[in-house]
Image 1 (cartoon, rainbow, N blue to C red):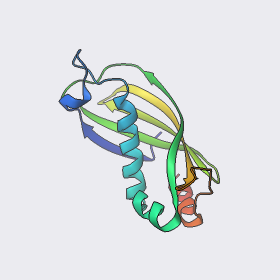
Image 2 (cartoon, rainbow, N blue to C red):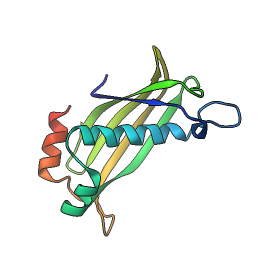
Image 3 (cartoon, rainbow, N blue to C red):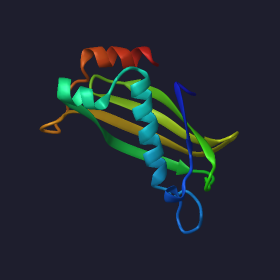
Image 4 (cartoon, one colour):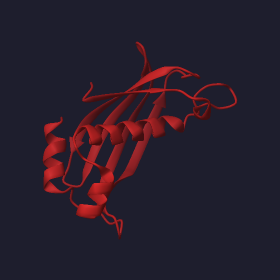
Length: 134
C-alpha cells in the first residue's frame, strides 16, 4: 500500500480528556506526512509558493477510525498516491501502531494560485516528480 512512511510519537497535546488521540489530530498527522513526503522528493512548499506562485490545499477528506492511539504510542503514517491529475492528487493514508491499523483516510489535495486560491495546474517539474514517486 505504501509509497511513503513517516513515524511520529503521540504527545499530551494530541490526546483528549479520555487519554486517546483526538480524532481531528489524525488529519494533522496525515498533513505532516504529506509534507514530509513532498520534502523527501525535494519539493519545499514555501519555495513552491514563492517561485511558482502555487500552494496545495486540502479539497476533501474522509477518515475511518478503527482503534485509538494513546499517549507515547509510536505511529507510522503510511501514504499512497492513488491518482495524479493535472491540478490534484488523491491519497490514501493510514495510521498504524505496530500491526494494527488505527485510522485510514482518503485525502484529495488541489493545486491553487496562492493569491486567488483558484485551481492551477501543478507545475510540470513537480508533476513529473510526483508521478515518478507512484
